[in-house]
Amino acid sequence: MLRQHLTAVRAAATIGGARVEGAELGSRSLVFEPGGVLPGEHRFAIGSAGSVGLVLQAVLPALLTASAPSRLLLEGGTHNPWAPPYDFLERAFLPLIGAMGPRVVAALERPGFYPAGGGRLRVEVEPAPKLAPLALAERGAITSRRARALLSRLPDHVGRRELERLASRCGWDRRELELVPCESDGPGNALVVEIASERLTEVFTAFGRRGIPAEAVADEAVAQLDRYLAAGVPVGEHLADQLLVPLAVAGAGSFVTLQPSSHLTTNAAVVERFLEVKVELEGIGPDRWRVSVAG
Image (cartoon, rainbow, N blue to C red; front, side, top):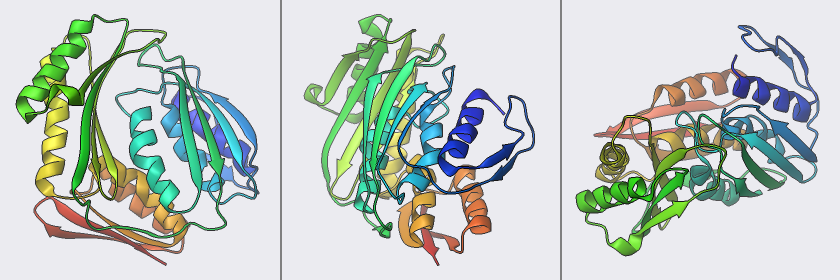
């Protein structure tokens, strides 16, 4: 168990009033006996660049239908290559949660790039009595698109090269590109590509790393974007991973996505063990799958 996993367990225990055994770094077993949900004001600090998004994932499902609103302060990594970055949560995931009834607003006070961390994210949750099912069969027409190169303590030319490469490969206009300087505890770079459609917004991210050319970072983002657009699906690979648990809590819902990742198939198996729902994964075309949840 790593720091972000430990913080997620402790956060879930706090909000779930749970009795826990094995909540320590390096633990390979865990006993978690939940009690009642405790909404309110909570602060959870990872103490590393571990993802605050993973901590939010652990506690949000319980807070969405809690008896009162909640305010969370999460400290750690907000832009981590191995977890959904803040931009994805704010633009792609949380608006769909809003469509299910609750109101969840996230505000980035300070970005935290891997490996320095130091990020601060505030989240306000206005719960709903029950989650409404969500159905996403089509994305509709694309209404806008933009690419942003986030830079902390790195030369501007890194971001400019990423944006120029993306514009060259995708035929985008310079008005759709933005260089975004960030104040963070350490160096960091992320290229964030956003596609807004009639039904939802999708976000694709590639992260700069030492020794990797800026053009290669842009190529990674373009590969994700090209696959999504070619398949004609509304829900991308990572958004599919995030949506399954809220749909399971709602007891019904469906979406069309890319070929399921191991995260999605594992989530489906775990959800069926804990909730009285059935998750069906059905291939309906080249790199097109329908995911359905029914009680």
